[in-house]
Image (tube, rainbow, N blue to C red; front, side, top):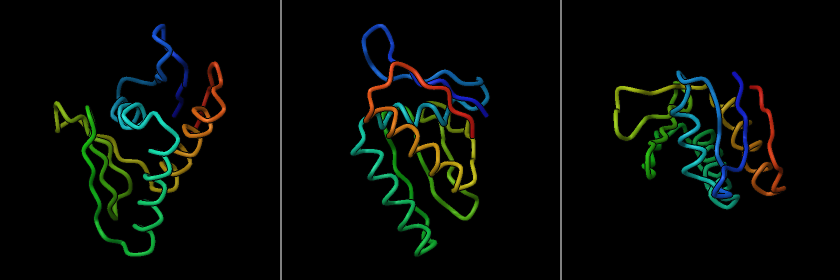
Amino acid sequence: MKFKFFYDRFDLPDIECEKSIYPISWVLTDNARPELCDEILEEIANFKASKSYWEMSYNKSVLCLSGKGATCIDAFNESVEYTLPLEKFESLIKKWKSFLSDRKESSQVNI
C-alpha cells in the first residue's frame, strides 16, 4: 500500500493513493496537524489497553477503532470504507505526523 504525502498548490498537506483506499487518506488529511495525530495515537493506546470500541467523525471521514482494526469511512458515503490492522494504521499516523512536523516537501510511504 503506497501513499505520497505532499503540499498542494494552496500549501495544504495532501495525499495521493490508490482510489480503493482513499478513505484512509481522508482520515489523515482531516487530521493535518501534529497535535491531532497525537490525539489519534493516544486513542490507539487507550484502545489497546481497554479493547473498548472508539469512533470519531471528522470533516469528510470517520475513524473507528475496534477488534477488526482501524476502519476509515467516507463520511459522505458510509458504504465506502477501508480497514487496516491497528499496527499498520498506527505506523501510518506516525509517518503522517513526521511529515507534518518536519514540513517535508513530499514523502513516499509504504505500509
